[in-house]
Amino acid sequence: MAKSKTKVRNVGIPNVEPPEKTCDDKNCPFHGNLSLRGRVMEGKVTSVKMHKAITFQTDYLSLVKKYLRYERRRSKKHAYLPACIEVNVGDTVKVAECRPLSKTISFAVVSVTKRGGVKED
Image (cartoon, rainbow, N blue to C red; front, side):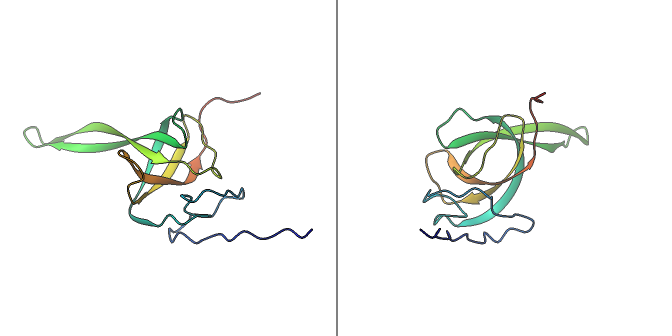
């Protein structure tokens, strides 16, 4: 039997390569029909306990006008995790905005930029 090549879509985000692993997920931006639009953000993974989803945290600076200084803030958001991408807590991921997939999920994981977490000996 000949192996059939699966189609891999170009998601249109610079410096993002499709994963080597393939999946049959219809909501995968690379192997399914999920289109990406809008914001592209980076964040640190804080939880992978949800089914096919992660929680990531973004840090940003906010100006306090009264004191003319900046304060650090953070926000947590949820993102869809395709089956072809593997992440762990502590990894830095790049996520892109997509249509709402559930009540709280409007982002999809596109790539893992930096591996973090526990070192294995």
